[in-house]
View 1 (cartoon, rainbow, N blue to C red):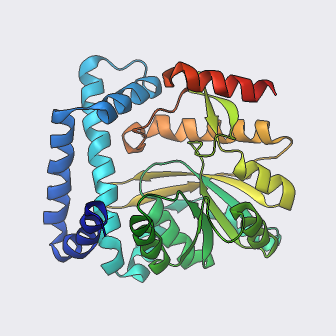
View 2: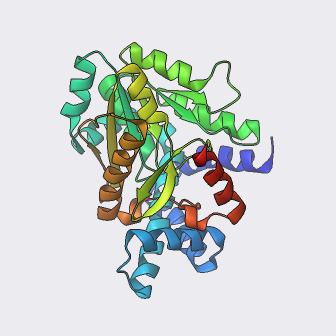
Amino acid sequence: MNLATLGYSAGWRLIRLLPESWARGLFRAGADYAVKRGGASIEQLRTNLKRVVPQAGEDELDELVRDSLRSYARYWCEAFRLPSMDLEAAYEKCDSQVSGVENLDAALANGTGAVVALPHSGNWDMAGVWLVGHSGTFTTVAERLKPESLYRKFVEFRETLGFEVLPLNGGDRPPATVLAERLRANKVVCLLADRDLTSSGVPVTFFGEQTMMPAGPAHLASTTGAALLPVGCWFTGDGWHFRIHPPIKVSTVQAATQAIADVFAADIAAHPADWHMLQKLWLADLPESRRAALARRLAR
């Protein structure tokens, strides 16, 4: 087991033993230190948020970057503490903060299953806790982190919450095959959908600039007839809010993915500090070689 795995293992064991106020304070202080120290990820977050809030001055942007890192730290603090939480109580607390539940209920009543598409905002693990309490186990896909021991830790953590987690690659069967089976069995599939990890995404316009977003949610909905439901996630003072939007009509995969991007953009613009995107996202930020490779793929 390497140092990263040991660190995360210690986090899951030790952070949940601290009083909640101490744990939150520790993570908040860590976020403030990270902002003060700076670095490539902090600068990329600043660049990303500048696109979300283009009217922000430098002081406002400084504050937004700090608040966003604090929000991200809150996500990790809650993630470390989740295994020891009363999940039924957490579900009940979430339940009063979910809007648009009728959209999910209608999809499952139709017997077609539902593809839930989420951005990296708020606490998406807590959204999963609510979903398990409301509709039962759902299926998702996780990037295969290295080392394998660290990936297994993340999978085991989410499995304790009632999630079924498939590896993005290296599994017994392609994840798309398994996801389609779950949808045809009238189950729910949840996918983070604001960042393409496969290099096979589709181009969309997001906050006025071009990026690539995963084709998977729209493709699954198109091939199985499942409802495609974008969901917004953000923090409230001491809780979480999840907005289940009405289903997106899937005429083409590209058009449906653009519609997801538009819904995400509206929710993120309303709650920019809770969007945790510290990676390069827009094509303009990618190295020239990467942009050229994407251009060649799209031309084909």
